Length: 121
Image (cartoon, rainbow, N blue to C red; front, side):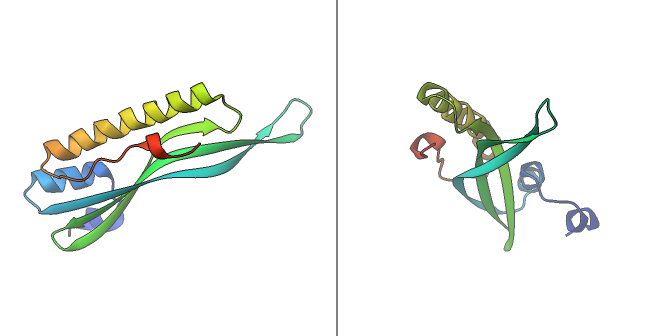
């Protein structure tokens, strides 16, 4: 492992470059919805809470026997959104995730593709 790998957080780009350099990479991903509360300052100086969620992927990589975790957020949505907007958000997050799957596959990293359609928002 280089000094840069020890000091920098690991990103998908790092894993992809290692695979392109010939390292053996195995991968898995778990998708998750994380509920969050955003605090917003309103006109009168009061703080208002807005309930939101993040759709993300938690990747686990085995690179030549060493384990790495990479988490990536694909979308932020709001609890107050309509069913139609929530469905559109799932589709957008899944399309963004598909772009990462394609990049991983192009570098020789195969994994089971999972999408956000089954997550309840």
